[in-house]
Every structure is written in C-alpha cells, then in structure tokens.
Length: 167
Image (cartoon, helix red, strand yellow):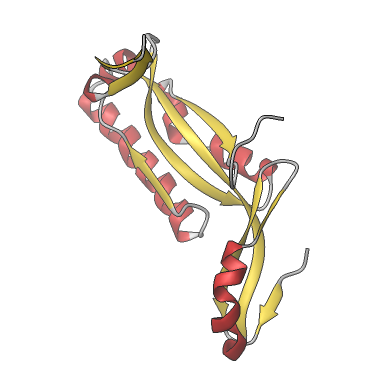
C-alpha cells in the first residue's frame, strides 16, 4: 500500500478521522499513523504488537550486579533504538513479582493475593508496544532482545482494536 499525502490545509479537518480509521489485518491490527512530511501529512499503515517480557527472577538475581546492570543497559539501548526509529511508542520494565497483587472473583467475592497470577518460574518483567509493518518485522526485532541472553523470554501478541467478540 502506498502512502497517502494530505495537504496541510486539509490536514486539520481529516486528522481526527484518519487517526480513528482502522482495519483488521490477517496478522494483527492495522492503524493509520500520521507522520509530518514537508508537503503535508503522510498516512502509513502499521500493525501494533505488545511484547511481553518474562524473566526467571531467581536466575536473573543470581547473576552478579555487574551482569544484571549490563543486561539492563543493553535492554535500555535496545528500547531507545526502537523509540528513535519510531517503532516503540511505549514500554516499561516492571518491579519484581513480589510487588504484584492479583485479583480474582471467588464465590462472588473479590479476593486479592500477593504476587503474580500463577506460580511459575517466570514472571512478567516488562513490556514494549511495537508498531511494525509486518509480523515478520516484529519477530526480527523480538529475536534481538538482549534479555534473552539472561534466560528471559519474549512473547509477541498482536493487538485487537475495538471490542472483543467471541467468534
């Protein structure tokens, strides 16, 4: 799909409509992104994905402080490159799993428990939202995540836009 260029005078009137337009793609959600260009606003189609970053806290915290800091540094550089190239509008590391609280409905009552939802070795350590032109592109980016070297894992999921409905 070739980009559509909208003239500056028309841009104000169509900006909101263009941002609200979306189409479901076969591999994820396509979004209209408006980017400033010299001659107007350029509209391109991308898909959004969330990359869920998991880590084995026991394994990670058994690394030396220098090794932990090196992984944090490399992950920060990886994320900053994605921000700089316009691929990541947001992302964040999360505090340790012990700080989590999980809510469930049991017998009609809301019950809060300390810690993550499931008893597993891996806990959610962070996330990144990526805007990519294809599923293959997001997979290539995820494969370069530095946290994998420390035993981490990254789960990539396409976004659903609009309401969720059973099919």
